Amino acid sequence: MPTAQRFHSFRDWCVEHFGHPLHRVALDAGSQCPNRDGTKGFGGCSYCDVDGSGTGALRAGAQLDEQLRLGLERIARRKHAGRAIAYFQSYSNTYVARERLEEVLAVTAPYLGREVAAISVATRPDTLPDEALEVLARWNTRVPVWIELGLESADDRVLLALNRLHTLAEFEDATQRVRRAGLLCVAHAILGLPGDGREGALRTARALARAPVEGVKAHQLMVLERTRLAHEWRAGEVRTLELDEYVQWLADFVELLRPDQVLHRLHGDAPDGLIAPTWSRINPGVREALEAELERRGSRQGARCEV
Ligand code: SF4
Image (cartoon, rainbow, N blue to C red; front, side):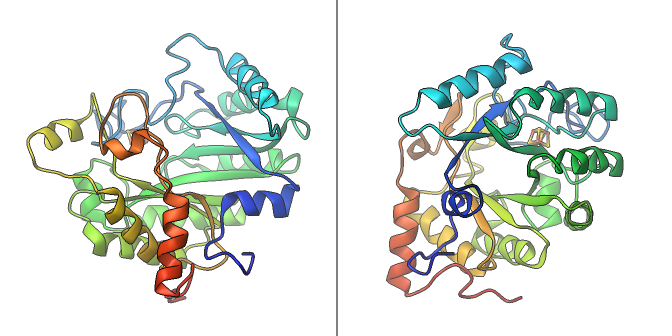
Protein backbone atom coordinates (compact mmCIF):
# COMPACT_ATOMS: atom_id res chain seq x y z
CA MET A 1 0.00 0.00 0.00
CA PRO A 2 1.47 3.45 -0.88
CA THR A 3 2.46 5.02 2.46
CA ALA A 4 0.34 8.13 1.89
CA GLN A 5 -2.82 6.06 1.57
CA ARG A 6 -4.88 4.56 4.29
CA PHE A 7 -6.14 1.56 2.37
CA HIS A 8 -4.89 -0.66 -0.45
CA SER A 9 -7.03 0.23 -3.44
CA PHE A 10 -7.55 -1.94 -6.50
CA ARG A 11 -6.60 0.95 -8.74
CA ASP A 12 -3.20 1.29 -7.06
CA TRP A 13 -2.64 -2.46 -7.16
CA CYS A 14 -3.36 -2.48 -10.92
CA VAL A 15 -0.87 0.33 -11.48
CA GLU A 16 1.73 -1.55 -9.39
CA HIS A 17 1.20 -4.83 -11.31
CA PHE A 18 0.09 -3.82 -14.80
CA GLY A 19 1.42 -0.26 -15.07
CA HIS A 20 -2.08 1.21 -15.51
CA PRO A 21 -5.65 0.84 -14.20
CA LEU A 22 -7.82 -2.00 -15.49
CA HIS A 23 -11.51 -1.79 -16.38
CA ARG A 24 -13.95 -4.63 -15.82
CA VAL A 25 -16.07 -6.00 -18.64
CA ALA A 26 -18.91 -7.84 -16.90
CA LEU A 27 -19.93 -10.99 -18.77
CA ASP A 28 -22.94 -13.26 -18.50
CA ALA A 29 -21.99 -16.78 -19.64
CA GLY A 30 -25.45 -18.21 -18.92
CA SER A 31 -24.19 -20.35 -16.06
CA GLN A 32 -26.52 -21.61 -13.37
CA CYS A 33 -26.57 -21.72 -9.61
CA PRO A 34 -27.24 -24.69 -7.30
CA ASN A 35 -29.42 -22.42 -5.18
CA ARG A 36 -31.74 -21.90 -8.11
CA ASP A 37 -31.83 -25.19 -9.99
CA GLY A 38 -32.83 -27.31 -7.00
CA THR A 39 -29.47 -29.03 -6.44
CA LYS A 40 -29.15 -27.17 -3.15
CA GLY A 41 -32.27 -25.08 -3.13
CA PHE A 42 -34.76 -23.04 -5.09
CA GLY A 43 -35.29 -19.31 -5.33
CA GLY A 44 -31.68 -18.27 -4.77
CA CYS A 45 -30.18 -16.16 -2.01
CA SER A 46 -32.72 -13.80 -0.51
CA TYR A 47 -31.07 -10.70 -2.01
CA CYS A 48 -30.34 -12.14 -5.49
CA ASP A 49 -32.62 -11.40 -8.42
CA VAL A 50 -33.25 -13.66 -11.40
CA ASP A 51 -30.16 -12.36 -13.21
CA GLY A 52 -27.95 -14.06 -10.60
CA SER A 53 -26.30 -10.87 -9.34
CA GLY A 54 -25.14 -10.13 -12.85
CA THR A 55 -25.94 -8.30 -16.05
CA GLY A 56 -28.68 -10.49 -17.53
CA ALA A 57 -27.03 -9.80 -20.90
CA LEU A 58 -27.43 -13.33 -22.23
CA ARG A 59 -31.17 -13.44 -21.52
CA ALA A 60 -31.39 -10.06 -23.28
CA GLY A 61 -29.92 -11.70 -26.38
CA ALA A 62 -26.24 -10.67 -26.30
CA GLN A 63 -23.97 -13.65 -26.97
CA LEU A 64 -20.84 -13.97 -24.86
CA ASP A 65 -18.34 -13.03 -27.58
CA GLU A 66 -20.46 -10.01 -28.49
CA GLN A 67 -20.65 -8.92 -24.82
CA LEU A 68 -16.86 -8.98 -24.61
CA ARG A 69 -16.33 -7.24 -27.95
CA LEU A 70 -18.79 -4.43 -27.09
CA GLY A 71 -17.27 -4.04 -23.62
CA LEU A 72 -13.78 -3.72 -25.05
CA GLU A 73 -15.01 -1.16 -27.58
CA ARG A 74 -16.59 0.88 -24.77
CA ILE A 75 -13.26 0.88 -22.92
CA ALA A 76 -11.34 1.87 -26.05
CA ARG A 77 -13.62 4.92 -26.41
CA ARG A 78 -12.87 6.15 -22.88
CA LYS A 79 -10.71 9.18 -22.36
CA HIS A 80 -8.34 7.09 -20.27
CA ALA A 81 -8.61 3.89 -22.25
CA GLY A 82 -6.77 1.00 -20.72
CA ARG A 83 -6.90 -2.75 -20.70
CA ALA A 84 -9.65 -4.93 -19.37
CA ILE A 85 -10.49 -7.70 -16.95
CA ALA A 86 -12.82 -10.22 -18.57
CA TYR A 87 -15.14 -10.61 -15.60
CA PHE A 88 -17.41 -13.66 -15.65
CA GLN A 89 -19.85 -12.25 -13.17
CA SER A 90 -23.32 -13.78 -13.33
CA TYR A 91 -24.27 -16.89 -11.35
CA SER A 92 -21.70 -19.59 -10.44
CA ASN A 93 -19.28 -19.78 -13.34
CA THR A 94 -17.50 -22.99 -12.31
CA TYR A 95 -20.81 -24.81 -11.83
CA VAL A 96 -20.46 -26.22 -15.36
CA ALA A 97 -18.76 -29.16 -17.08
CA ARG A 98 -15.05 -28.82 -17.82
CA GLU A 99 -15.77 -28.57 -21.58
CA ARG A 100 -18.22 -25.71 -21.05
CA LEU A 101 -15.74 -23.83 -18.84
CA GLU A 102 -13.09 -24.17 -21.57
CA GLU A 103 -15.61 -22.93 -24.15
CA VAL A 104 -16.52 -19.92 -22.03
CA LEU A 105 -12.91 -18.95 -21.36
CA ALA A 106 -12.09 -19.35 -25.05
CA VAL A 107 -14.01 -16.15 -25.91
CA THR A 108 -11.15 -14.22 -24.33
CA ALA A 109 -8.47 -15.93 -26.47
CA PRO A 110 -8.39 -13.38 -29.36
CA TYR A 111 -7.70 -10.57 -26.89
CA LEU A 112 -5.46 -12.24 -24.28
CA GLY A 113 -2.41 -10.30 -23.21
CA ARG A 114 -3.52 -7.37 -25.36
CA GLU A 115 -6.94 -5.82 -24.63
CA VAL A 116 -7.65 -8.43 -21.93
CA ALA A 117 -5.00 -8.29 -19.19
CA ALA A 118 -6.70 -10.57 -16.66
CA ILE A 119 -9.63 -12.94 -16.17
CA SER A 120 -11.89 -12.95 -13.16
CA VAL A 121 -14.31 -15.80 -12.49
CA ALA A 122 -17.08 -15.44 -9.91
CA THR A 123 -18.39 -18.54 -8.23
CA ARG A 124 -19.54 -20.12 -4.98
CA PRO A 125 -17.22 -21.91 -2.53
CA ASP A 126 -19.15 -25.17 -2.98
CA THR A 127 -19.14 -25.16 -6.80
CA LEU A 128 -15.41 -25.08 -7.37
CA PRO A 129 -14.28 -28.61 -8.25
CA ASP A 130 -10.59 -29.39 -8.62
CA GLU A 131 -11.03 -30.00 -12.35
CA ALA A 132 -12.27 -26.41 -12.79
CA LEU A 133 -9.22 -25.21 -10.87
CA GLU A 134 -6.98 -27.25 -13.20
CA VAL A 135 -8.54 -25.55 -16.24
CA LEU A 136 -8.19 -22.11 -14.68
CA ALA A 137 -4.60 -22.80 -13.62
CA ARG A 138 -3.73 -23.43 -17.28
CA TRP A 139 -5.28 -20.12 -18.32
CA ASN A 140 -3.36 -18.50 -15.49
CA THR A 141 -0.15 -19.23 -17.39
CA ARG A 142 -1.35 -16.81 -20.08
CA VAL A 143 -2.82 -13.95 -18.01
CA PRO A 144 -3.51 -13.59 -14.29
CA VAL A 145 -6.72 -15.38 -13.32
CA TRP A 146 -8.52 -14.72 -10.10
CA ILE A 147 -11.44 -16.47 -8.48
CA GLU A 148 -14.13 -14.38 -6.86
CA LEU A 149 -15.72 -16.29 -4.02
CA GLY A 150 -18.86 -15.14 -2.28
CA LEU A 151 -18.65 -15.46 1.47
CA GLU A 152 -20.91 -12.49 2.35
CA SER A 153 -21.03 -13.35 6.08
CA ALA A 154 -18.81 -15.48 8.31
CA ASP A 155 -21.81 -16.55 10.41
CA ASP A 156 -23.35 -19.83 9.23
CA ARG A 157 -26.70 -18.92 10.83
CA VAL A 158 -26.84 -15.73 8.78
CA LEU A 159 -25.87 -17.65 5.62
CA LEU A 160 -28.65 -20.17 6.26
CA ALA A 161 -31.23 -17.44 6.84
CA LEU A 162 -30.19 -15.85 3.54
CA ASN A 163 -30.61 -19.23 1.80
CA ARG A 164 -26.96 -19.16 0.69
CA LEU A 165 -26.68 -22.82 1.59
CA HIS A 166 -22.93 -23.00 2.01
CA THR A 167 -20.85 -22.61 5.14
CA LEU A 168 -17.81 -20.68 6.33
CA ALA A 169 -15.88 -23.99 6.42
CA GLU A 170 -16.63 -24.56 2.72
CA PHE A 171 -15.39 -21.05 1.95
CA GLU A 172 -12.17 -21.66 3.91
CA ASP A 173 -11.60 -24.97 2.12
CA ALA A 174 -12.16 -23.33 -1.29
CA THR A 175 -9.66 -20.55 -0.54
CA GLN A 176 -7.01 -23.15 0.33
CA ARG A 177 -7.62 -25.01 -2.93
CA VAL A 178 -7.48 -21.77 -4.94
CA ARG A 179 -4.14 -21.01 -3.30
CA ARG A 180 -2.79 -24.49 -4.10
CA ALA A 181 -3.86 -24.02 -7.74
CA GLY A 182 -1.69 -20.87 -7.85
CA LEU A 183 -4.62 -18.53 -8.48
CA LEU A 184 -5.51 -15.28 -6.78
CA CYS A 185 -8.60 -15.23 -4.60
CA VAL A 186 -10.97 -12.31 -4.15
CA ALA A 187 -13.71 -12.67 -1.52
CA HIS A 188 -17.06 -10.90 -1.36
CA ALA A 189 -18.57 -9.55 1.84
CA ILE A 190 -21.90 -7.80 2.36
CA LEU A 191 -22.19 -5.37 5.25
CA GLY A 192 -25.60 -4.95 6.85
CA LEU A 193 -27.06 -8.40 6.25
CA PRO A 194 -30.16 -9.22 8.31
CA GLY A 195 -29.16 -10.77 11.62
CA ASP A 196 -25.45 -10.05 11.08
CA GLY A 197 -25.16 -6.50 12.39
CA ARG A 198 -22.01 -4.49 12.99
CA GLU A 199 -20.49 -7.37 14.97
CA GLY A 200 -21.12 -9.64 12.01
CA ALA A 201 -19.21 -7.31 9.69
CA LEU A 202 -16.26 -7.48 12.10
CA ARG A 203 -16.50 -11.27 12.26
CA THR A 204 -16.42 -11.43 8.46
CA ALA A 205 -13.37 -9.15 8.27
CA ARG A 206 -11.53 -11.35 10.78
CA ALA A 207 -12.36 -14.48 8.77
CA LEU A 208 -11.10 -12.85 5.57
CA ALA A 209 -7.89 -11.71 7.26
CA ARG A 210 -7.23 -15.31 8.36
CA ALA A 211 -7.88 -16.75 4.90
CA PRO A 212 -5.46 -16.97 1.95
CA VAL A 213 -7.38 -14.22 0.21
CA GLU A 214 -5.51 -11.53 -1.73
CA GLY A 215 -8.48 -9.31 -2.52
CA VAL A 216 -11.76 -8.26 -0.93
CA LYS A 217 -14.94 -6.78 -2.36
CA ALA A 218 -17.16 -5.07 0.18
CA HIS A 219 -20.76 -4.16 -0.61
CA GLN A 220 -23.64 -2.55 1.24
CA LEU A 221 -26.76 -4.70 1.49
CA MET A 222 -29.00 -3.69 -1.42
CA VAL A 223 -32.66 -4.57 -1.82
CA LEU A 224 -33.70 -5.42 -5.39
CA GLU A 225 -37.09 -6.01 -6.93
CA ARG A 226 -37.98 -9.65 -7.60
CA THR A 227 -36.21 -10.88 -4.45
CA ARG A 228 -37.35 -12.35 -1.15
CA LEU A 229 -35.50 -9.52 0.57
CA ALA A 230 -37.80 -6.99 -1.14
CA HIS A 231 -40.83 -8.58 0.58
CA GLU A 232 -39.02 -8.55 3.92
CA TRP A 233 -37.98 -4.92 3.44
CA ARG A 234 -41.52 -3.84 2.52
CA ALA A 235 -42.81 -5.66 5.61
CA GLY A 236 -40.34 -3.64 7.71
CA GLU A 237 -38.44 -6.78 8.72
CA VAL A 238 -35.07 -5.62 7.35
CA ARG A 239 -33.42 -2.27 6.86
CA THR A 240 -30.46 -1.03 4.87
CA LEU A 241 -27.59 1.12 6.08
CA GLU A 242 -27.49 4.89 5.68
CA LEU A 243 -24.42 6.12 3.84
CA ASP A 244 -22.70 7.55 6.95
CA GLU A 245 -23.39 4.36 8.85
CA TYR A 246 -22.01 2.24 6.02
CA VAL A 247 -18.78 4.25 5.95
CA GLN A 248 -18.38 3.72 9.72
CA TRP A 249 -18.88 -0.03 9.40
CA LEU A 250 -16.60 -0.17 6.39
CA ALA A 251 -13.84 1.63 8.29
CA ASP A 252 -14.14 -0.92 11.12
CA PHE A 253 -14.05 -3.72 8.53
CA VAL A 254 -10.98 -2.36 6.73
CA GLU A 255 -9.08 -1.89 9.99
CA LEU A 256 -9.41 -5.62 10.66
CA LEU A 257 -8.24 -6.79 7.24
CA ARG A 258 -4.58 -7.49 6.53
CA PRO A 259 -2.67 -4.49 5.13
CA ASP A 260 -1.74 -6.48 2.01
CA GLN A 261 -5.31 -7.34 1.00
CA VAL A 262 -6.44 -5.36 -2.02
CA LEU A 263 -9.83 -3.65 -1.83
CA HIS A 264 -11.35 -4.43 -5.20
CA ARG A 265 -14.62 -2.75 -4.23
CA LEU A 266 -15.76 -0.46 -1.46
CA HIS A 267 -19.47 -0.47 -2.28
CA GLY A 268 -21.93 -1.91 -4.77
CA ASP A 269 -23.28 0.09 -7.71
CA ALA A 270 -27.03 0.28 -8.09
CA PRO A 271 -28.23 -2.48 -10.42
CA ASP A 272 -31.56 -2.33 -12.29
CA GLY A 273 -34.42 -2.89 -9.91
CA LEU A 274 -32.76 -1.28 -6.89
CA ILE A 275 -35.21 -0.39 -4.13
CA ALA A 276 -32.88 0.55 -1.25
CA PRO A 277 -30.67 2.17 -0.17
CA THR A 278 -31.29 4.98 -2.64
CA TRP A 279 -27.80 6.43 -2.05
CA SER A 280 -26.52 3.51 -4.14
CA ARG A 281 -27.97 5.28 -7.22
CA ILE A 282 -25.61 8.24 -7.06
CA ASN A 283 -21.84 8.26 -6.89
CA PRO A 284 -21.79 8.31 -3.10
CA GLY A 285 -18.10 9.17 -2.64
CA VAL A 286 -17.44 6.15 -0.42
CA ARG A 287 -13.76 6.12 -1.30
CA GLU A 288 -13.24 9.71 -0.14
CA ALA A 289 -15.48 9.22 2.90
CA LEU A 290 -13.53 6.11 3.95
CA GLU A 291 -10.23 7.90 3.55
CA ALA A 292 -11.56 10.81 5.66
CA GLU A 293 -12.94 8.50 8.36
CA LEU A 294 -9.67 6.57 8.67
CA GLU A 295 -7.78 9.86 8.84
CA ARG A 296 -10.16 11.13 11.56
CA ARG A 297 -9.44 7.95 13.53
CA GLY A 298 -5.71 8.20 12.89
CA SER A 299 -6.06 4.71 11.52
CA ARG A 300 -5.51 2.69 8.34
CA GLN A 301 -6.17 -0.69 6.78
CA GLY A 302 -4.86 -3.44 9.03
CA ALA A 303 -4.53 -1.19 12.10
CA ARG A 304 -6.57 -3.66 14.19
CA CYS A 305 -5.71 -6.81 12.24
CA GLU A 306 -5.36 -9.80 14.55
CA VAL A 307 -3.30 -12.14 12.35
S1 SF4 B 1 -25.23 -18.03 -5.11
FE1 SF4 B 1 -24.97 -16.15 -6.34
S2 SF4 B 1 -26.14 -16.48 -8.25
FE2 SF4 B 1 -26.77 -18.06 -6.77
S3 SF4 B 1 -28.63 -17.22 -5.85
FE3 SF4 B 1 -26.89 -16.66 -4.53
S4 SF4 B 1 -26.17 -14.64 -5.20
FE4 SF4 B 1 -27.53 -15.51 -6.80
